[in-house]
Image (tube, rainbow, N blue to C red; front, side, top):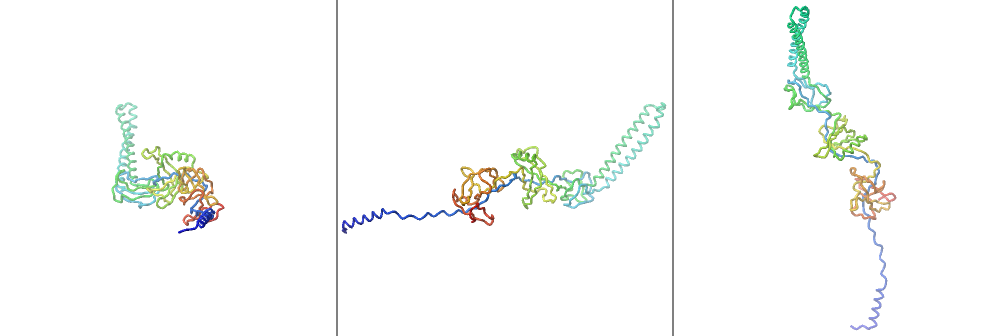
Length: 383
């Protein structure tokens, strides 16, 4: 098709003019939406220094009650599980064989005592004859010897009587300590042997006070010893099942050597245990306080993030924008961290929602019913 030259020129000029006109201005770029996060406030408080370990409750004294003589159990004077006092009668053995032995010992003593009396009278009577040289020196010496011999026999028979009385006393088996009786092993009619290593009648455990044995790493030994010197050492035990705690424990024992196989040292703490919450053989969580960090800055452990440059936290400013700030951790305390530097009391840190954050990002503080009211920076609007 043929177009006139004037039409072509006009079309080109119009196109060039359209291309040279400035482009229409673009609208403002949409801002990024705030990132939902959860926060907490850096607090200042006194934080105890705690050494955690697992311990076992042990009675301060445990006695296996046994007979000191051979005999037959005549009567049991307690029930299993009774609380008994020191000196309480627990078991009576058949006394008759021991009473007969005591009568025989008294008879032997009376016989020897009579002989001793006669021998002493003979010496007294023949002493004048000896002075008058009416009898031989040998005969008088024999009389003196007999008097001394019978005197010694009297002492031996007196000892035999005392021993028979002692054995008779052993037929009454009494409680050597205050404690609680366990399972009764032997009953009325059972034969017992003196100091039988394989058999006891019952076991007594002292429950008040009571002790807890636990081991701590040897690295904690210096801190615990220093706490003892400063009278700051305190022990708390918690029942791992019921959650009941006792905070009135006092360290009472340090083993005299570190166990080379485990690198730990054995300690014991004593608790009054008047309510019998602690029971022998029970496993408990032991917390030993060795000091207190005064006015420490603490934040939840989830607030601290680890990067190539060390530990960092996101701090929320009053404009609800976050700042990435380095911090230095002193130590942990349960679910919290104690910071040596990097934060001030009252500053708000992010504890959840870090993945979408960058320095300068704006945040929206969310509240979870399980966590209660979230922290809001001063001067910022409530979410």
